[in-house]
Structure formats: C-alpha cells, structure tokens
Image (tube, rainbow, N blue to C red; front, top):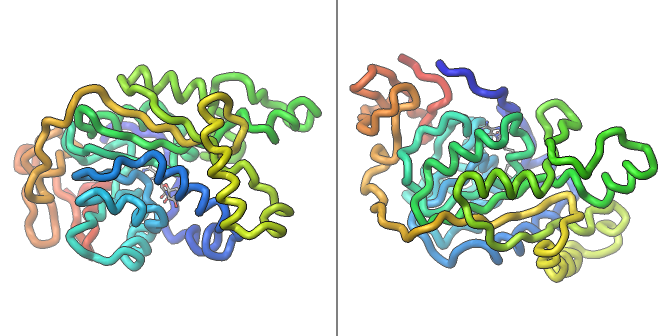
Length: 300
Ligand SMILES: C[S@@+](CC[C@H](N)C(=O)[O-])C[C@H]1O[C@@H](n2cnc3c(N)ncnc32)[C@H](O)[C@@H]1O
C-alpha cells in the first residue's frame, strides 16, 4: 500500500450531535446554507461530497441527480444513511480522500466543507479530487482561514506566536489546520481550476451575539456580508467556487460499479458480487456492508 498522510478519524464520533445539534451552531449552519445556495449550480448529474460526515449538508445538493456521500468514517456514513435514507439518490462510500476509488473525470460537481481543516497534505487531497472531476465541473471548497480577524488581533497583541499573514498552513491542534486564502487560490490555480465566487462565512461567530440575536437573523446578516469575500477575507470560514475549463462531455455511467476504479492498480473494470467489490486485474477486493462501499482497506 502506498503511504498516505494521517487521517483525523471520526469513527464512533458524536460530532453531528455534540457540535451541531446541541452545540449552539444553528447560525453557522444557516450561514453555510446561504453560501452553498449562492454557489451551487441549479442542476447537475453526479455530485461527490467529500467528508460528508452525517450528511448535514447533503440535502442542499438535491439539484444533482445522484450524490456520492463519501467519508472516511463508517459511523458517520451510518448516521448519514439514517438522515437521508437508502434510496437511489445516494451512494455511500467509505474512503480516504488521499486514495479515492473513483474513475477519473467522473463527477460534474464536488464539495468539501469543513474537511480540508483536517488535511496534513492539502494540495495532495485537492489533486485527488480534481482527478475525479469532468471538464466544466464545479468544486465548492470551504476552508478554515488562518488570516481571520481574531487571529490577526491575537498576533498583534502577542497572544499568538504564529503569523496569520504567511502562506503556510498552521496546525493549531493535532490534525487541525488553518489555511491562508492565497495558498488555497494558488493550489487551485495550479490544478487548472478557474476561481469564481469567494464568500466569507461566519462573520458573527461570537458567543454573545449568538445568544442575543436569533440564528435566522444573524445568518441573514451574514449572507449580506458574504460577498465582501471577493475583496478581503477576515472570517474564520471561507467558501471558494472553482470550476474546470471545458464543457461536460463524459457520460455518467449507468451502474454504480462503473463509478469505481481499483485503488491498487487503477483498473476501471471492477465487479460487484453480493458483499464485495473485486478487481479482476489485480485480485484486490473490498467489502460492501449495510449499503456502504468500504474502500479504506482491501480485504484481499
Ligand atoms: C468536521 S467533519 C465535517 C463533516 C461535514 N462535511 C459537515 O460539514 O457537517 C469532517 C469530516 O471529514 C472526514 N474526514 C477526515 N479526514 C478524511 C479523509 N482523509 N478522507 C475522507 N474523509 C475524511 C471525517 O470523517 C469527518 O466526517
């Protein structure tokens, strides 16, 4: 197996419940919904949601005919299944973003929200995603911004040693990274993306404001200020819309097994047999359990 960067493992985590449902983050959730609505194409064929977690954002991609709900953690995917159901609309895949099991040029849309935050090698993760995208595809990326106002003030007041102005990522907690907007733009440009809208999100991430002002109103205000992201980015969270040149020419395959490629030898002719996916070319196999294609570790 090739070496890949470490994964921030959410297996068994109650992230959705503790961070979102009971964590007082209705405002941030609604503000993200506004940003996504502004950036998503009105329709599409096949969307890849990278690091989907418990599927909090997935219903927002309903304009796409089918969504591949992908995450490293199977317990997150199980929660996503409970939220979204097991219909033809959703395909659940457990995989590492650094070793994606999808054919090149498959998807016409992808999102990665609150996930780059955990990437020790962000350019490598972005490169993997780029390979799965068709010409003309839209990629919506959220990243945690190291040059946010709070970090700048803390730096000036000498309460923080690292500079918010330099381009390298900062790992403030193990496997938790903030990024400089210019570095993100450079990486996306180097991968051939054209950059569209940049929206700043979570302008009002302050406990007092969130307690005083109803989430809907605060999110509405956030939405008003989001377009200022085109000029400057001082918020903790930034959304970027990136598109690949060209027009979609690749047809989305009719069967799900045709979405995949072998993570070992790259063969694109895999076979699905009851509880497994197998690669006739190199003999590798992966488990399919409870509606989840599990490409993290091969079983053969
Ligand atoms: C902070 S959560 C965000 C979940 C979801 N996008 C949301 O905004 O509600 C980060 C997610 O990224 C997933 N993740 C972290 N590293 C990953 C990797 N290397 N490959 C795939 N998923 C990964 C985690 O399992 C987790 O579900």
